[in-house]
Length: 65
Image (cartoon, rainbow, N blue to C red; front, side):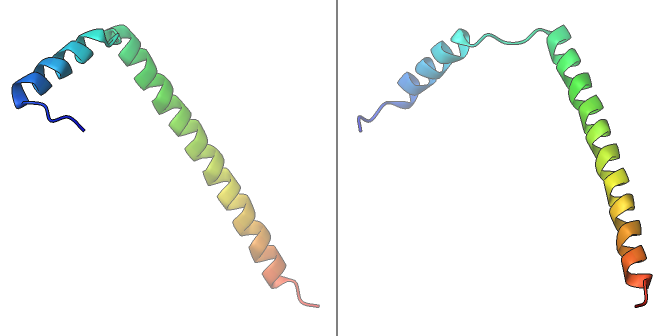
């Protein structure tokens, strides 16, 4: 593996960073809101599933044969 000087490394990093297509502020905001909405939906789903499974387990445990 070839050794690169720190200066050369920084220049190459800057060149690569300039090639990146950065999202706009609007795109970032939209993506963030979408992620937060999806997290809320998934959290609610698992909360409901947890309650249902908990009730089922309690029901099974209270049945006496």
